Length: 483
Image (tube, rainbow, N blue to C red; front, side):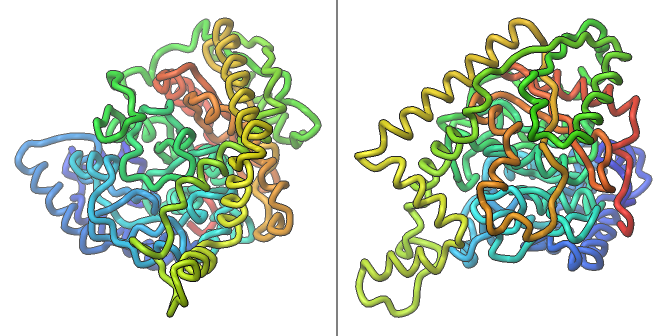
């Protein structure tokens, strides 16, 4: 049962080959057995899961249907879940139980999805390795000595290890696509505003976006269908009709124009990954796609711009965690200032503190124009590059990451080296574009991803290309040894 995809589970439940309750019990037992190796979950919700599974079975018995009805999933632990700990991977929120459900959680629950638990993550989604979590690092099931990517590493590791078929995740600068690449999954960052951020604890409000992590494009289409849609509670949510993402999966790629930016194949890219990307291009050419070289000239400025904008927004968003209203509070403070200082100093980990300090500096009176304002101007140039490119091509293709997953602890003493691993992913967040990573092969036994980018609200096009690619390759079917 654990090897089934979300689509296969939907068909099995519809054909009454098994019940949601039976499947849920199998997966909960598997998590209990295997997750101690991975540390992919922060909280398990066994009672809730069995309750939801029984309810889903009852709904099916009454004639209801739906791809997510009775399907087991997990939520990244920054989506608020009523009455359940929502920690954001931080000591600061270790004792926080959300009083309401995030819109994404509520929508998926209404569709009948079964929540098995909350997955581990980099603290407040700040990281590329899932090593900054208060609950310890997550291990990559393909090699337990390597990182699974971040910040959605818990969701990625759990799905890759077949502990469950799919999970929710979030992407601020690549935090869905990079873990997908590192763990041999398909991960989709939707257009900014396509999925509600209400109840999703913020890192950088103009960059964060929720999306699905699964083994196939077909499964991502199913999960995105349940997540997407306008939400009046979220001022950044866009009132745009949600298409049937599964309906366009089998469209032909004949004549599809794929742009390959020349800037992607620089000295920083592992040549073995470059070869796998070129193999992916050849596979898509055989399916009828037309390849064209393009240029994204301002890509070189994206990382410095991102690492000014994101910390600036983080310093503002995280100011609410002060030891007064909710979350961690220090013991026996001497006065109010001591309460603030010690609660934040003890509650936040080193990476979060680092980014808060960078952001506060960039927003300070003497440096706002020199850093933050300039970064926002670069952001606009990055967007303009994409708009010009999409006048010539339908999608853009390239590597998801410059290197495969690194060893645990390898970049802990050099945060900038970890930041540079986001070079191919952050541009989509700066521009608000949809992006997808899909499995493209292996280097030294570790998975490699190929990234696809599309114009606004063209998630269906990305899923179509990825699905057709997966019908003609078998990378996404590989399973890590021991899982």
